[in-house]
Image (cartoon, rainbow, N blue to C red; front, top):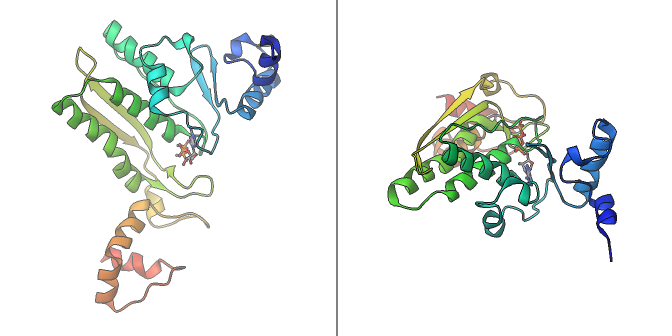
Length: 238
Ligand SMILES: Nc1ncnc2c1ncn2[C@@H]1O[C@H](COP(=O)(O)OP(=O)(O)OP(=O)(O)O)[C@@H](O)[C@H]1O
């Protein structure tokens, strides 16, 4: 049977500060590689969570996992974005002060997905009654709308956010959401008139056009060329 040292050698350590050579970048990367090969995409550096995009469904955002991380201390469970959300949420309710989760990384690294998991975790952690459910639904369901107008296919990511997002969830003293704001920064407006080769305009243009396509095209007596959206955009501008 595999002993703890053999296991550690195979899967790596869950927190980079446990590495013997914790100042070495190579040791840090090697630890991430080992963990990634074992489908362990999350690793801590103290309170910072490092996430490696698996580009596949690892079944780690299930209801079972949600329960596993709920009301449990950060260090009692394996690294996970739910643990970060739980820690921020519990600290907020216990200390009665604001908390912030900063998500950063290069394009396609998984920031948008991580922010959705945080949002869902916080939404599911609060109580259920009609007013709260309405606010929670608005917060969660605003995402597809924002993505329709602010996300586009790029050469690096089929669903790339072309704007920076600051999402603010306001909670009452019990920790139930009572409102929120989404502030966007630096929307890449130039994408509306120009896209690099292989990239696309914001999703909404295709979704909207797909919905209106038959109607508009029949009025304009045009046929759709699947490889050319040019006349469809002209139709939309009118
Ligand atoms: N935790 C995850 N598990 C499985 N797949 C993931 C995960 N995170 C991201 N992905 C996949 O990677 C793709 C890119 O992720 P995401 O859009 O979150 O990147 P991003 O960092 O927000 O990129 P950008 O800066 O371009 O907006 C997702 O569409 C999804 O297919």
